Length: 85
Image (tube, rainbow, N blue to C red; front, top):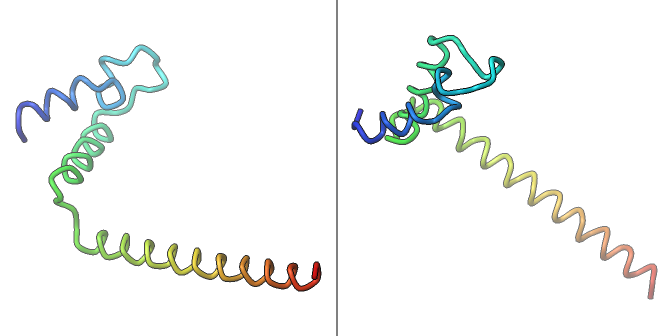
């Protein structure tokens, strides 16, 4: 891990419980390490292929849902415009 990245992560109060002032925001060092590793992997692009594939499936599903809702809204607008004329 580059030193500049380590400094950035360690200076972030959300990632480093010693720097945070409120006791609720403190986490166990295990979950903190896990969050730091997840963030480092995200930044460097090192994440499991399965997760990337799942993200792509979720994006595709979201686009399909948006397309469906948009078409449904256009259909309702068309129906309403026929009633108004």
